[in-house]
Image (tube, rainbow, N blue to C red; front, side, top):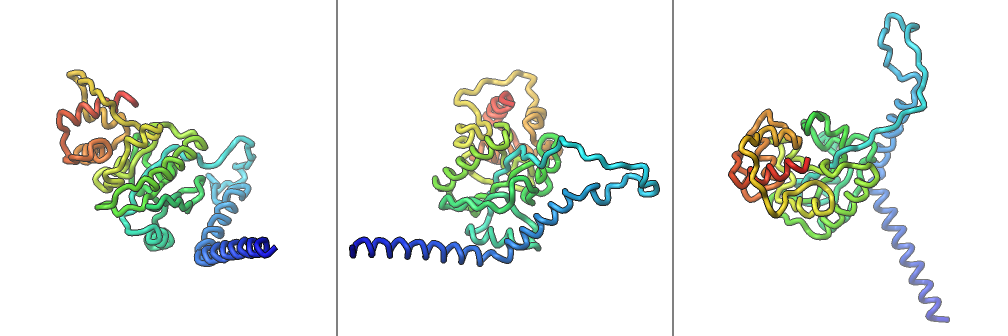
Length: 278
């Protein structure tokens, strides 16, 4: 009987501690949660306004326009996943940054070094993570992608197994949920050549082996004599308006040991092999 009472007490104590911790976590971010909910409510009101406010194409002849709501519509569907490193020192520091209206930046997810996944923006909403960017013909990656920030200072930090394992699980969920093509798992440097270099020294091959992005084969074939490296980079998705920057971005992703803005014979073999996968 004594054992049973002690067991019952310990369970109640553990439950109470869990509730206290949850309460502390909730109260810690109560102010920002309210801002998030208020903004989401505001967007919902904009979407739900019938007819849409401010969408008169002829303000001088409003009667020449009619609203008839179609039954065939949906909401934003992300088509890309863009991976970043935070270039900061901790998960807490990044979360604080994403609370700053002055910084004005955010991401849908942040993954800590210990593998903790923090979801910060609904997948169907537009997060400010890509900035000025381009991939193929898409010039607004913020509107078409999910941004994932990995807690890493971008200098000396390794990529812990716990962090990468959590990332792989998250990517599997996102790929299945939104039917994201294998080719559309890319890095910040890929979409913003010269301006960004993240994630640096990243294990892209490990992701590609699981179906998230492409990687080159172990055996590389020689390209044809007329192989055009600039066109190949452009075909993959790189913005080649600044060709040296595009080459560097490609090498940050696929070469890593050398990111000089020129293509060596080995780089060209890799580029040709990757190009054939698109």
